[in-house]
Length: 278
Ligand SMILES: C[S@@+](CC[C@H](N)C(=O)[O-])C[C@H]1O[C@@H](n2cnc3c(N)ncnc32)[C@H](O)[C@@H]1O
Image 1 (cartoon, rainbow, N blue to C red):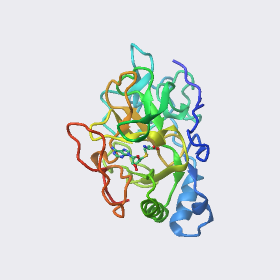
Image 2 (cartoon, helix red, strand yellow):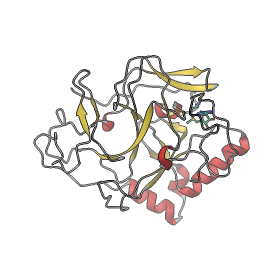
Image 3 (cartoon, rainbow, N blue to C red):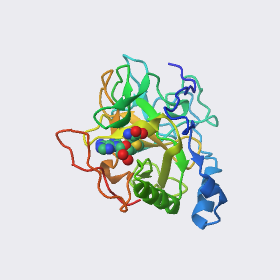
């Protein structure tokens, strides 16, 4: 197995800027609020944890080795016995080899064979896969502008007022993962908005019975990436969806937003899109 960072997806709408990874918003850069300053500082901080493994194929790796190769497809996927929502990948500082390390995946970008479609079910854009995806495989990051809580509230409110779709997603890390995050004792919250600047992840719709799920993934930054992975085997042609507030760890809508009827049509449909506070 060999991975190189390739992301040649494009947006349907040329007014949306395609970005490969999270970026700071202009507002955050220009603001002098303590929250903005903290976000900028974190964005410019490099994590220095490194492993000294020759091969990261067991839990002796400092980073926990969250992935294992699938025997059939040969691609890396979340280990079946992984019990944490917080994943840490190896980096260029580690002594393992880039090409053979089993603990580097999200850093290489989205999988191929994703296609943006107009989803009849959701009456808006969505993503399908044009190839079967094994359970636990990485789909793509949900990347966009990193926002402070204040900015996120403003944007969600403005979206609601203008009748626009909302892309703001807030990931709340659980405190009880096995890794303690040095910067925030594991209780980190990240808010991302790919409405104007984002990657392919912005097209995944919500389902109450989703085929994808979210993990928080750190590479060399204290700010985690929102990694979307296959929750089960996904057949070619299926639309990819995740639960916008699974286990209350993420929340795309704020309390400002009136409830939106959920169009997922699953048997366990909760009737409305999740409506939690940021
Ligand atoms: C992250 S975007 C998803 C991509 C979006 N459909 C598009 O056309 O770009 C989230 C927005 O899509 C719509 N959406 C996503 N899942 C939905 C669902 N289950 N039911 C109704 N609308 C949904 C809502 O308008 C939501 O604010």
